[in-house]
Image (cartoon, rainbow, N blue to C red):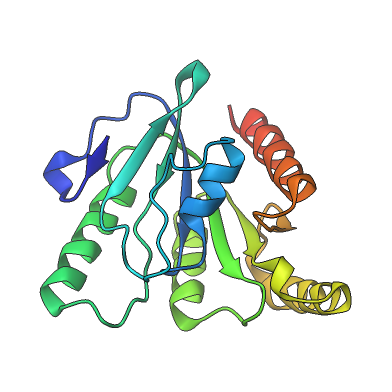
Length: 188
């Protein structure tokens, strides 16, 4: 199911694993890879395509929740306001959020919007892990260097885990599945 405005958000019916990040960071592609489905979540090379909160039902009362990307400058002011109201309502309503998977592009330092999101997650005591996407765009030494940089930058925020990810690498998908599974089990 999808929700484009606050009134369409469903009551919390189960445990939610939430995927968040900037526009075009790879949230929908990551969800497709984790679920071994090519087109479960709609993927586009154009930033800002996901405009609704999308729910995907899993077994055992869990839902994957794909949030619209933040930081896309070409949205109209009314669209930005709609998005802000939707996100605020989502995170301040009585949701059963077990984990937020925050995606960041490994090639770039966290943006101001990324840091605002991380600060918000910390202030609300929402458990989160960081996934560094697009690792295949860097050499192995570049991945190692940038991962160490992110660990230093993000240490004060205390994410539960930091994982490098590529949709072209099954082992990174398995690492992420295992991390999500163990972190969620700790929170239940």
